[in-house]
Image (cartoon, rainbow, N blue to C red):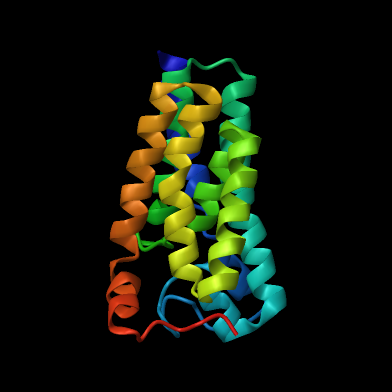
Length: 194
């Protein structure tokens, strides 16, 4: 029990490390929370700092989800413990204690978590994202659809109900975090991928 609680706390703190803010500070770029969409995520960093800064941010956000869940599995936590670590690192990214609880939307960290829970599901997420992005040219739509399909893939490939419920909850949180994007999609005002 103590190991589980310690792992969950560490996962939240690890998730609270904002790749976007750190990358922007290191590269002497404006704080992403004050520029563009004011979202400390890779897409906004791309707008204010270019491809290199965005790629580093994306890699960092994926990596923190991946590392936290891999370690949880490696130390032998139960499926429930692993699921709680997954939620903790994800929520840490969304509500980082180190940055005034103003975090990103969570897509990259979600992907990192999924790759660690089940790499075939993570690959399926990537394929879904690419297909939707190529057809419709909207990153937000691709992210949301790929994420909503994740619990189905988790069930089909792992039959682990705890992981299904965890990824379903995370997918619902992603929709809430993207509510502005959803509204812009409905109005036809969402930016397309160039």
